[in-house]
Image (cartoon, rainbow, N blue to C red; front, side):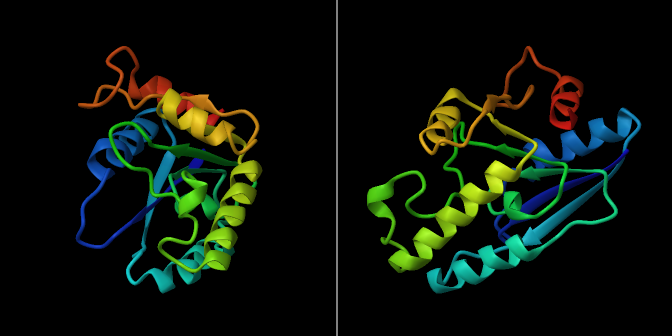
Length: 177
């Protein structure tokens, strides 16, 4: 099966790539899947640029791939009929739009209409996902507050913040169902 892992990153800032993307891609290959990683550079500074970057991700339609695994926001905004989203909350602040986690702060970083547009775009993209996973009960609670349907907890395996009882093979299979 052709699988594309979509991730966003801030250039030269590091992130979860070593913790999640590389082990997941390696396990998918070990399970016999043709696997590619697409890392899309995104910057939230200046804040006025955030909306255009969110819309760019939303307009991106992935083709010639059987299954997309989107890691977090804004990667989860890409369009694909077989998209699974996995958002990481545990021991880090998820990169979600202003106002999604804390509605009172919706206009704190960008103007209010932009924050509302980003939040609504995220909700729409998450409801389109075939499967929606978070890595912790805290994340599950957050997304359930937004009435997004089924949100399953899938902890990160074996990492310094991960679940030592879960293997990457088991997680990869869950993400592909």
